[in-house]
Length: 206
Ligand SMILES: N[C@@H](CCC(=O)N[C@@H](CS)C(=O)NCC(=O)O)C(=O)O
Image (cartoon, rainbow, N blue to C red; front, side, top):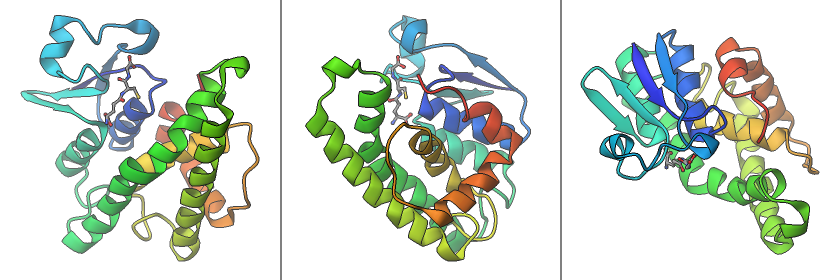
Protein backbone atom coordinates (compact mmCIF):
# COMPACT_ATOMS: atom_id res chain seq x y z
CA UNK A 1 0.00 0.00 0.00
CA UNK A 2 1.25 3.49 -0.82
CA UNK A 3 0.94 6.41 1.60
CA UNK A 4 0.39 10.03 0.59
CA UNK A 5 0.69 13.07 2.83
CA UNK A 6 -1.37 16.03 1.68
CA UNK A 7 -4.78 17.70 1.76
CA UNK A 8 -7.41 16.87 -0.87
CA UNK A 9 -7.75 20.53 -1.92
CA UNK A 10 -4.15 20.74 -3.16
CA UNK A 11 -3.77 20.47 -6.94
CA UNK A 12 -0.41 18.78 -6.40
CA UNK A 13 -1.90 16.16 -4.10
CA UNK A 14 -4.75 15.64 -6.59
CA UNK A 15 -2.27 14.71 -9.33
CA UNK A 16 -0.82 11.94 -7.16
CA UNK A 17 -4.15 10.65 -5.89
CA UNK A 18 -5.67 10.60 -9.40
CA UNK A 19 -2.67 8.64 -10.68
CA UNK A 20 -2.79 6.15 -7.80
CA UNK A 21 -6.53 5.61 -8.29
CA UNK A 22 -6.16 5.34 -12.08
CA UNK A 23 -3.64 2.54 -11.48
CA UNK A 24 -5.96 0.78 -9.02
CA UNK A 25 -3.46 1.04 -6.16
CA UNK A 26 -4.33 0.70 -2.50
CA UNK A 27 -3.51 3.93 -0.71
CA UNK A 28 -3.69 5.69 2.60
CA UNK A 29 -3.74 9.50 2.65
CA UNK A 30 -2.84 11.66 5.65
CA UNK A 31 -4.38 15.15 5.91
CA UNK A 32 -1.46 17.58 6.01
CA UNK A 33 -1.08 21.18 4.84
CA UNK A 34 -3.44 24.15 4.69
CA UNK A 35 -5.82 24.24 7.65
CA UNK A 36 -4.57 20.82 8.70
CA UNK A 37 -1.03 22.12 9.30
CA UNK A 38 1.69 19.63 10.03
CA UNK A 39 4.17 20.64 7.31
CA UNK A 40 6.59 22.12 9.83
CA UNK A 41 6.47 19.12 12.18
CA UNK A 42 9.94 17.58 12.45
CA UNK A 43 8.60 14.20 11.29
CA UNK A 44 7.19 15.82 8.12
CA UNK A 45 10.27 17.99 7.49
CA UNK A 46 12.37 14.84 7.76
CA UNK A 47 10.40 13.47 4.80
CA UNK A 48 10.25 16.70 2.79
CA UNK A 49 12.58 19.54 3.78
CA UNK A 50 10.60 21.84 1.42
CA UNK A 51 7.70 21.61 3.91
CA UNK A 52 5.22 21.15 1.07
CA UNK A 53 2.70 18.49 0.12
CA UNK A 54 2.48 15.98 -1.44
CA UNK A 55 4.86 13.38 -0.10
CA UNK A 56 4.57 9.81 -1.30
CA UNK A 57 5.92 6.70 0.43
CA UNK A 58 5.99 3.29 -1.17
CA UNK A 59 7.90 0.86 1.04
CA UNK A 60 11.41 2.26 1.36
CA UNK A 61 10.88 4.78 -1.45
CA UNK A 62 10.06 8.35 -0.45
CA UNK A 63 9.20 10.90 -3.15
CA UNK A 64 8.25 14.60 -3.05
CA UNK A 65 7.47 16.94 -5.96
CA UNK A 66 4.12 15.97 -7.43
CA UNK A 67 5.38 15.25 -10.94
CA UNK A 68 8.16 13.04 -9.59
CA UNK A 69 5.46 11.18 -7.61
CA UNK A 70 3.28 10.79 -10.73
CA UNK A 71 6.24 9.56 -12.78
CA UNK A 72 7.28 7.14 -10.03
CA UNK A 73 3.80 5.61 -9.79
CA UNK A 74 3.35 5.49 -13.57
CA UNK A 75 6.78 3.88 -14.11
CA UNK A 76 6.40 1.39 -11.28
CA UNK A 77 2.77 0.36 -11.73
CA UNK A 78 1.70 1.76 -15.10
CA UNK A 79 3.15 -0.92 -17.42
CA UNK A 80 2.77 0.59 -20.90
CA UNK A 81 -0.29 2.65 -20.05
CA UNK A 82 0.34 5.81 -18.07
CA UNK A 83 4.12 5.38 -18.60
CA UNK A 84 4.68 4.76 -22.34
CA UNK A 85 7.61 2.35 -22.77
CA UNK A 86 8.72 3.78 -26.11
CA UNK A 87 11.02 6.76 -25.31
CA UNK A 88 9.53 9.05 -27.96
CA UNK A 89 5.98 8.41 -26.74
CA UNK A 90 7.13 8.88 -23.17
CA UNK A 91 8.77 12.20 -24.05
CA UNK A 92 5.49 13.35 -25.62
CA UNK A 93 3.78 12.77 -22.28
CA UNK A 94 6.68 14.17 -20.28
CA UNK A 95 6.86 17.46 -22.15
CA UNK A 96 3.27 18.29 -21.25
CA UNK A 97 4.07 17.59 -17.59
CA UNK A 98 7.01 19.99 -17.81
CA UNK A 99 4.87 22.53 -19.66
CA UNK A 100 2.28 22.31 -16.90
CA UNK A 101 5.02 23.07 -14.33
CA UNK A 102 6.72 25.87 -16.19
CA UNK A 103 3.88 27.53 -18.12
CA UNK A 104 0.29 26.48 -17.45
CA UNK A 105 0.14 26.25 -13.67
CA UNK A 106 2.25 29.41 -13.06
CA UNK A 107 -0.11 31.26 -15.42
CA UNK A 108 -3.28 29.93 -13.76
CA UNK A 109 -2.07 30.10 -10.15
CA UNK A 110 -2.65 33.82 -9.51
CA UNK A 111 -6.13 33.66 -11.10
CA UNK A 112 -7.06 30.80 -8.80
CA UNK A 113 -5.58 32.42 -5.69
CA UNK A 114 -7.19 35.81 -6.43
CA UNK A 115 -10.67 34.44 -7.23
CA UNK A 116 -10.91 31.53 -4.81
CA UNK A 117 -8.64 32.33 -1.89
CA UNK A 118 -8.67 36.15 -1.76
CA UNK A 119 -11.54 38.31 -0.48
CA UNK A 120 -12.97 40.53 -3.27
CA UNK A 121 -11.81 43.73 -1.55
CA UNK A 122 -8.25 42.45 -1.27
CA UNK A 123 -7.85 41.32 -4.89
CA UNK A 124 -5.03 42.64 -7.06
CA UNK A 125 -6.91 43.31 -10.28
CA UNK A 126 -3.89 43.95 -12.47
CA UNK A 127 -2.29 40.70 -11.30
CA UNK A 128 -5.59 38.92 -11.96
CA UNK A 129 -5.95 40.41 -15.43
CA UNK A 130 -2.38 39.53 -16.43
CA UNK A 131 -2.78 35.99 -15.10
CA UNK A 132 -6.10 35.48 -16.92
CA UNK A 133 -4.53 36.62 -20.20
CA UNK A 134 -1.53 34.27 -19.86
CA UNK A 135 -3.85 31.44 -18.80
CA UNK A 136 -6.15 31.92 -21.81
CA UNK A 137 -3.12 31.87 -24.13
CA UNK A 138 -1.79 28.68 -22.55
CA UNK A 139 -5.16 26.89 -22.75
CA UNK A 140 -5.59 28.02 -26.37
CA UNK A 141 -2.29 26.29 -27.11
CA UNK A 142 -3.44 23.10 -25.39
CA UNK A 143 -6.76 23.27 -27.25
CA UNK A 144 -4.91 23.51 -30.58
CA UNK A 145 -2.70 20.57 -29.62
CA UNK A 146 -5.75 18.44 -28.80
CA UNK A 147 -7.38 19.21 -32.15
CA UNK A 148 -6.17 15.98 -33.77
CA UNK A 149 -5.53 13.68 -30.82
CA UNK A 150 -7.66 12.23 -28.03
CA UNK A 151 -5.15 12.77 -25.21
CA UNK A 152 -2.08 14.97 -24.86
CA UNK A 153 0.35 12.25 -25.94
CA UNK A 154 -1.83 10.47 -28.48
CA UNK A 155 -4.75 8.08 -28.43
CA UNK A 156 -4.77 7.08 -24.75
CA UNK A 157 -4.44 8.52 -21.27
CA UNK A 158 -0.83 8.88 -20.08
CA UNK A 159 0.89 10.62 -17.21
CA UNK A 160 1.05 13.65 -19.52
CA UNK A 161 -2.68 14.22 -19.05
CA UNK A 162 -2.48 14.35 -15.26
CA UNK A 163 -1.12 17.83 -14.42
CA UNK A 164 -2.92 19.55 -17.30
CA UNK A 165 -6.13 17.67 -16.45
CA UNK A 166 -6.03 18.91 -12.85
CA UNK A 167 -5.38 22.48 -13.99
CA UNK A 168 -8.18 22.27 -16.57
CA UNK A 169 -10.72 21.27 -13.92
CA UNK A 170 -9.83 24.41 -11.99
CA UNK A 171 -9.89 26.67 -15.04
CA UNK A 172 -13.26 25.44 -16.29
CA UNK A 173 -14.84 25.77 -12.87
CA UNK A 174 -13.81 29.34 -12.13
CA UNK A 175 -16.45 32.00 -12.53
CA UNK A 176 -14.72 33.82 -15.40
CA UNK A 177 -15.19 34.43 -19.09
CA UNK A 178 -13.29 31.98 -21.26
CA UNK A 179 -12.75 31.71 -24.99
CA UNK A 180 -14.39 28.77 -26.81
CA UNK A 181 -12.05 25.80 -26.52
CA UNK A 182 -13.90 22.95 -28.26
CA UNK A 183 -11.08 20.40 -28.36
CA UNK A 184 -10.09 21.05 -24.78
CA UNK A 185 -13.78 20.59 -23.85
CA UNK A 186 -13.98 17.25 -25.72
CA UNK A 187 -10.83 15.94 -24.00
CA UNK A 188 -12.03 17.23 -20.61
CA UNK A 189 -15.35 15.36 -21.02
CA UNK A 190 -13.42 12.10 -21.39
CA UNK A 191 -11.53 12.88 -18.16
CA UNK A 192 -14.80 13.59 -16.36
CA UNK A 193 -16.01 10.12 -17.38
CA UNK A 194 -13.15 8.53 -15.40
CA UNK A 195 -14.08 7.62 -11.80
CA UNK A 196 -10.54 8.32 -10.54
CA UNK A 197 -10.66 11.87 -11.93
CA UNK A 198 -14.12 12.49 -10.54
CA UNK A 199 -13.16 11.30 -7.08
CA UNK A 200 -9.79 12.97 -6.65
CA UNK A 201 -9.81 16.04 -8.88
CA UNK A 202 -13.43 17.18 -9.16
CA UNK A 203 -13.63 18.46 -5.60
CA UNK A 204 -14.97 21.85 -4.52
CA UNK A 205 -12.59 24.74 -5.20
CA UNK A 206 -11.45 26.22 -1.89
N1 LIG B 1 6.41 21.83 -6.90
C1 LIG B 1 5.74 21.24 -5.76
C2 LIG B 1 4.81 22.27 -5.16
C3 LIG B 1 4.16 21.75 -3.89
C4 LIG B 1 3.27 22.82 -3.27
O1 LIG B 1 3.37 24.02 -3.56
N2 LIG B 1 2.37 22.36 -2.40
C5 LIG B 1 1.46 23.28 -1.74
C6 LIG B 1 0.02 22.80 -1.91
S1 LIG B 1 -0.50 22.80 -3.60
C7 LIG B 1 1.74 23.28 -0.25
O2 LIG B 1 2.29 22.34 0.30
N3 LIG B 1 1.35 24.37 0.40
C8 LIG B 1 1.46 24.47 1.83
C9 LIG B 1 0.28 23.87 2.53
O3 LIG B 1 -0.60 23.27 1.88
O4 LIG B 1 0.25 23.98 3.76
C10 LIG B 1 4.99 19.97 -6.22
O5 LIG B 1 4.63 19.90 -7.39
O6 LIG B 1 4.79 19.05 -5.41
